Length: 88
Image 1 (tube, rainbow, N blue to C red):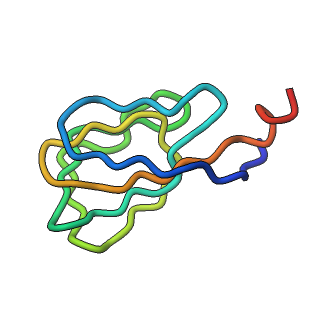
Image 2 (image 1 turned 120 degrees about the vertical axis):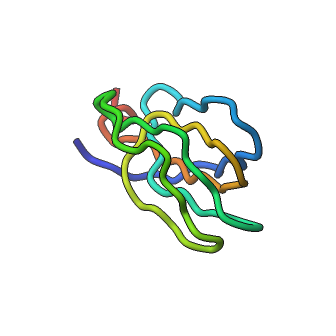
């Protein structure tokens, strides 16, 4: 799978579950204005990879994710599109 083509980041400031659009993925999560606590996150294969994980203010977590849900805090979630999806 090729990865590339960054998209407009997403600001997450609630406890809703966010899912990357078809052919896309979340490649980084950055806590802003305080710590961000991830309730759950799934990888691009649908497996739960994070639960009750804290990202300190200003820190980034870099990992390919398909969904993310916060328990508390705010985060900027960076998105990219897979090259394979772009080529279809």
